[in-house]
Image 1 (cartoon, rainbow, N blue to C red):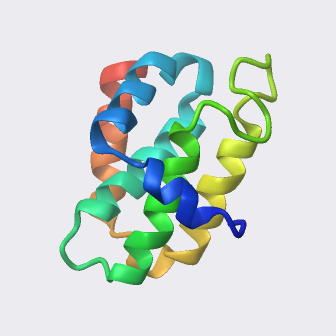
Image 2: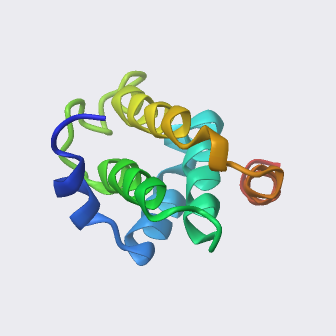
Length: 114
């Protein structure tokens, strides 16, 4: 994550997260959405420590912001920076990702991607 994670965290709103997911799920791809959803479900877990939630909110905020390092409308690579932020956050909070977070993410993916 970069030094601007606090700024991106301020951009995170649950409604904005779902709007981005629903609007751009197909464009972003299954891998990006799976990681975003896994982090989201970890964020909702009461057992997740505050520091980990801060990391997650920063990554999800970056995902939501339409003006990031590589514009999301750029074909093929538009979500690569978002993926990088999500992967970094997953690595940092990995010890707090539970099987049920992954299961919920996979269930949602099945609804959207079949």
